Length: 296
Image (cartoon, rainbow, N blue to C red):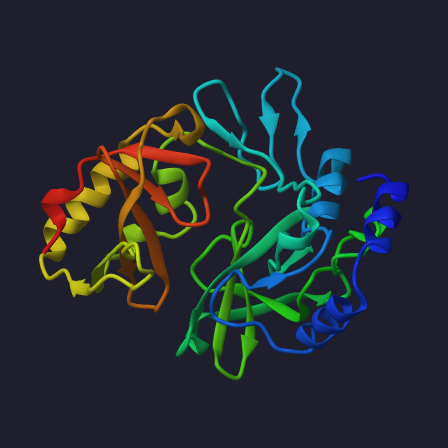
């Protein structure tokens, strides 16, 4: 987004909406990663992050032509590269929506809100830095710098997890997890399920939730008790090659699988039509894995 385009967009924003956003910025982050707010002709919070990343803030090409990502993973033709987040100006000013993603930048990586562990004090490790919380929809590109973000406060290691992928913040309602889910290359399920979330540590609770119906009602949640069978299925999923969602005819989401570890970290999988699986908040990647047999 060029500077003159940004100014043009700001000139179209109604004062009423500006006041609403200013008020919402004072509210602490919620459990869900996304908060939707109606706006007129405005930018997504990550617009500047995309420009910053593409200018060299995150990835850079290696000598052999493969993509070297900020988290140390090297891309290749065998993997699916998930680029830095980017966004375009809404086309319809009166119906535009913006995605208020909570994030911060640390060591050239963007960490986005993932989930909350309500009793997660045992997860908090060494403090690594502090986010300014000064980035909003109107922040210029040159202000997306190390230690900035849309959420302010100190951030910490997550014990037992690689800080290249997972960090956390502490709130009175629990420990908020943030993960680096862009500018990465995914070759197999293990690149996410194991390298990021360490599912081999064991699953202590699993739940299946049906997709919301056409009236918007949430599907029923059912516990899965056959955990040994489920863990064997996860092992197979970790070996499955990653596929590009954009090149796969997977159909619609039919349900959700929540896998919780003993430390409280939960991995959310989306169960798609035609036997495909996705990790929530990573829509660019999928795996083909029959999942009906693990359901209760």
